[in-house]
Length: 193
Image 1 (cartoon, helix red, strand yellow):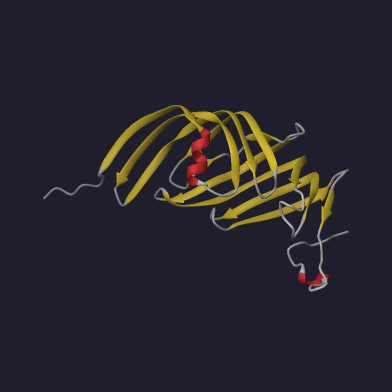
Image 2 (cartoon, rainbow, N blue to C red; image 1 turned 180 degrees about the vertical axis):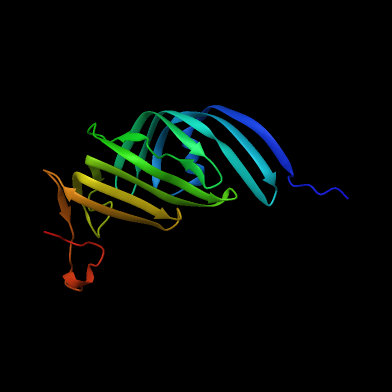
């Protein structure tokens, strides 16, 4: 009896693949995705546990992070694709609407091309991290630029966003507190001196 260790093993390329297709896999949280990618990929393994390996070159990327109402762009970048990360954007640089840069670490993790989840951070010495109005988020809103790191983790359905930053000039964060709640109930923000 022959025992197969793989059900399939093939190489394929994507050329000028529109990045807007990412919104199909990430239906909430991002919008107005632009740009394209070219990639050389190897897809192999068992049908129940496929594996992937390769690299993608991204050009003219742009995306809006809906919850933060910030738009980020990158003229070019290289994404590593492997059995841990569907897209690992580590060491790539993105730009905010003001032309400031941030360095990316991590990306989108997967388990056998399923269970997609975020494990990505961006770090900068000056960057636009938040640009919301009360209509975007009535819990907190404002304009925040400064030095720091933003970390996105978890599923696309329930993403955790941790911001560790020192605000820069012109930043303004609004945290409305109604009569029904007091300041001790606001546990998601820690103020330091």
